[in-house]
Length: 171
Image (cartoon, rainbow, N blue to C red; front, side, top):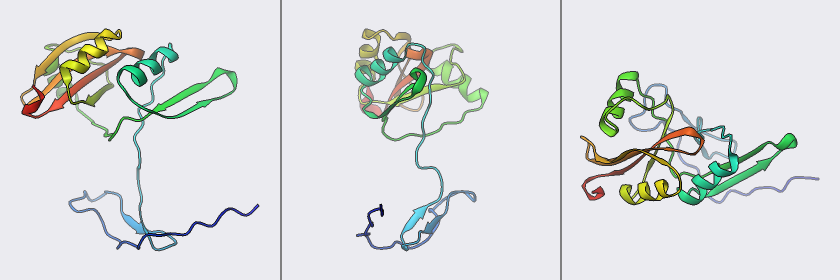
């Protein structure tokens, strides 16, 4: 069977690097059809092993509100659910920064090496929602020195989560 032919409907874009990009930033190169294609990472996934898989999926899907993008089941009972979380970033912090964030949000050093952070519209409301669904409040909504409103929770799968709303409208 011959695969269907794809016909491009967009105009080719010029090849260039991103403005202000670091020396090793991904390059944009033309593909076989002359269209620009970025070479590099297109998605970030944080992969979490959860002993209580159904509870963790329900918490992040139904309580946090992350939509299901994909689900897979395999032999031996293996299951995975991939939930969308809007824009993803990988924030790499040295130990001093990790300690600073713990001090600002919680007042003591508590976070494991991996912590999730979700930007939300209403930190107090979302905090109440998560606590109502079984999350443990580690620190209530707190105004940070950089003018965001952050709370810290321990949630399903033993993860620490920061909820944050940016700017003065956040509180």
